[in-house]
Length: 232
Ligand SMILES: Cc1cc2nc3c(=O)[nH]c(=O)nc-3n(C[C@H](O)[C@H](O)[C@H](O)COP(=O)(O)O)c2cc1C
Image 1 (cartoon, rainbow, N blue to C red):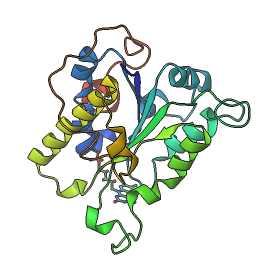
Image 2 (image 1 turned 90 degrees about the horizontal axis):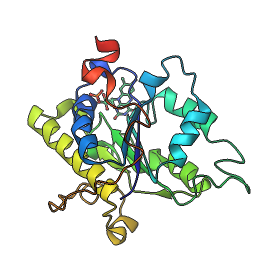
Image 3 (image 1 turned 135 degrees about the horizontal axis):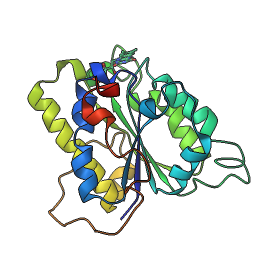
Image 4 (image 1 turned 120 degrees about the horizontal axis):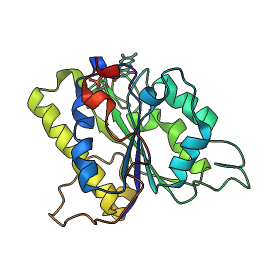
């Protein structure tokens, strides 16, 4: 079993359609997957006052970090940058003495308004999503982490309700696969994206029932049981 920390960042979850559907699967998953921790950064830090010691303790207590957010201006929402600036300290995360993240895995889960055809050398946006995430990939490498190919949801505005529902099922399969530590390293090594590999359907092998940091170490459920921030 791998201990999986989802760092979720959506500044306007009350207006979200896709990410609301994705994180709605988390409460049921957490009952099955003892090593899964869901941490909603905008809920925890609405004023951007990131608790560095708490965040570092969470990172230390997990093996896989999932950075999950909508794509905003070809990048992350601003709280993710604030989190990076404060939490990934020299001498702790990187530098000759900074080895606290060594060997952990990092995965970007990103929802993207533009369709797949718009991202790439022939597309309107000229770069692939993976290329645009290069600062995070390189940050992971600097921190001696293994960067997994990103899991990307394209064309969010055009997804039908059925497609959103299917995507939420794939997100659940993705988190289960990470937690169960059933990764196809060979396929992942050469992949641009993790789609189709990380979310491949799993056989019905039950997850381990061992205790893990998912049990109460951080925010237990997505914001206000998904009723919107502050229960609105
Ligand atoms: C401030 C802002 C910036 C955005 N920037 C981009 C962008 O650079 N590229 C893109 O494809 N979509 C962009 N989008 C669209 C979002 O990625 C998209 O609406 C979101 O992933 C949908 O998920 P949701 O329903 O959970 O909000 C942006 C949206 C907002 C509000």
